[in-house]
Length: 301
Length: 279
Image 1 (cartoon, each protein chain N blue to C red):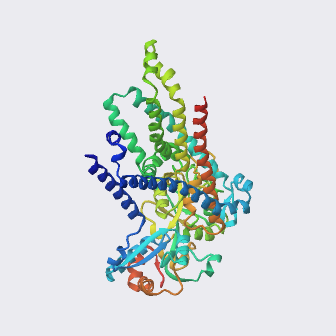
Image 2: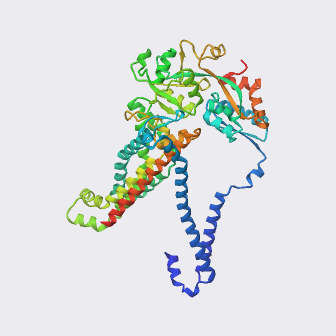
Image 3: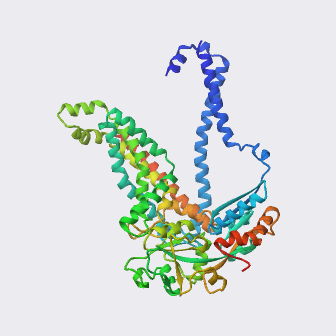
C-alpha cells in the first residue's frame, strides 16, 4: 500500500526505460505462471483420459460403473464398490465434520473473545497443514483401536475412515465458513440487537442465513477434499473391494484402490486404474463446477 | 528518490525466488560427482525385507563404499522392478506367474519359508484342519464356535494382491478358490501381525520369520509350523523365497547374492527367520 502510494507519486517521465522493461518482464513471468497452471490441468486431464479411456471401451462403461466385481487378474473391472465407498466415507465425514466445523466457525467469529480467538484460529489453521499421512497414523494408533473396542471386529472400516476424514475436513470448512460469517456486515447484527434479539437469536435468524451461501461453499470444498483424500483413508479403511454391509465393515475408495494396486498393476489392470483416476477427476471437477454454479446463481439473484 | 533501492531490492527478491524455484526443478548435477559410492537397489517382498536389510547391512560393513538400498512394496513390485531395471535385485516370496516367465528373470532361491496362520493369543483355538482353515479364509466359516472356539464372529485379515504370501497361501491353502471379499486388506506383513495381536477375534497369515509372542500360531491338521516340520516336509504351507535378477547377475548384484547364499549368512541371518536353503 505504501509502495503503491509512492509509485503514484512518481510522474510518468520519471520512469526510465529499464523500468518499463522490468514491468514487461514481470508481466511475462506472471502470465507464464498462469499458463503453467492451465497447461498442467489440460495435460493431466488429457494424460489420464488417454490412459484410462481404453478400459471403458474394452470393459464397457455401464458394465464397469454398475458391477462390484473387481477381479483385475481375471479381467473383471467393476468399480461400483469403490464409487459407493468414496461416497460413503465422504457423506459420513461430512455428517460428523460439517456441524463441528460450522460450530467452530460461529464460535470464532461471534462468540470468542479476541484472546481466545487468537489461540483457536491459528490452531484450526495449523490443523489444515498437517500432512495426511500423519492423520493416517493418528487413525491407526488412536481411532482404529477405539472403534475396535466399541464395535468389535478389526476396527478398520467405514467408521474409522469417516472419523479420520471428518477431523481432516474440519479446518477447511471452519476456515472458509468463518470468513463467510465474519463478512456479514456489522449493521445486520446491530439491527437485530436493536430489535431486542438475543445473541443466539441473532446468530440463528440473521447471521447464519446471511452467510449461508458461503457456508455451503465451504462444505462443498470440504467434500472435495474428502473425496480426493488417499493416504489417511487407505491406512484405516480396511481396503476390501466390496460395498460395505454395515458401518464397521471394511471398504475401498476410488483413491485407495489406485494407491494399493498401482505399484504392481500392468496391462489392462493398469489401464483400469487410470480409468478410476478419470472417474475421480470428473467427480472432483463436478464439485468445483457445483461451487461455480452455486455462486453464479447467487450473483444472478 | 528513495524508492530506487527499494524497487531494486524487490527485483532482487523476485530474482532470488525465481532462481530458487528453478533450482528445485533442475536436479543438482554435482551430487553424483562427489559421491563415489556404488549402490545396489533391491525391492520387493515385505517378507524378505528384514532379512535382506540385515544381510545388506553386513554386506555394507564388509564392502566399504557400497550402499545397499532395500525397499518393500510386495513380491509383484519386486518382479516388476527387476524386469524393468528399477531394481538390481527383485525379491519375491512367490514363483513367477505364467506371464512373468518370459521377462528374462533368473531365479535365486535364498531361503525356505513357512506361512503360519496366526490368531490372537487369547484365542482358545490352536488347531484347524485344512478344510476348516480354507473355510475360514473363504468366508464359509464365520464364527469361532464353528471351529471349536468362542461364540464370536471371525475377523478375517488378508493381504493385498501384490503380496507373494497371499499368492502362496491362496494356492496351497485355498486351492485357488477365492478369498472372502469382505476381509480387511492390509498392505504389509507387519500390519497383519499387529492387528491380529490387538484384535481378539482376528485371524491372518504371515511368514514364520515375522511370528512373535504377540500372536499365536495355529497348527494345521495337527502339524505346527516349526523349522523341523518344514525341513521334514511335514508342514504343507512352505515355499521358497527368491531373489530375481534380469539375466545372470553381474557385479554387485552377483556379489550380494553369493554373500547371502554363503553358509555364514545363511546360518546367522537367514536362519534366524527362515529355514536356510541348504537344509
